[in-house]
Amino acid sequence: MHNEFTAIFERDGEWYIAYCPKIPGANGQGLTKDGARASLAAAIALVLEDRREDSLRGVPLDAERETVIVD
Image (tube, rainbow, N blue to C red; front, side):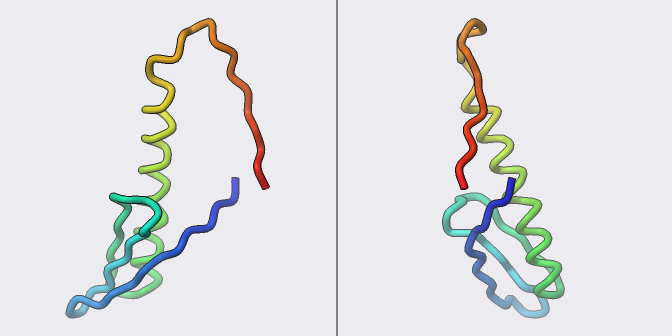
């Protein structure tokens, strides 16, 4: 699945700090902007996976599950 998010980059001394306003809690850092971007992408993936898992807790076992694709 392809997703695009806005990343905000700030400098903090030698470090780049990155965050995504649309995904609270997703933050990254790196000594280069590319490093911060990669760190942020990994953080976004973890947050989204956790939210997916969390959203399915408590769903009845006999409930039907299907995939819906949005382009």
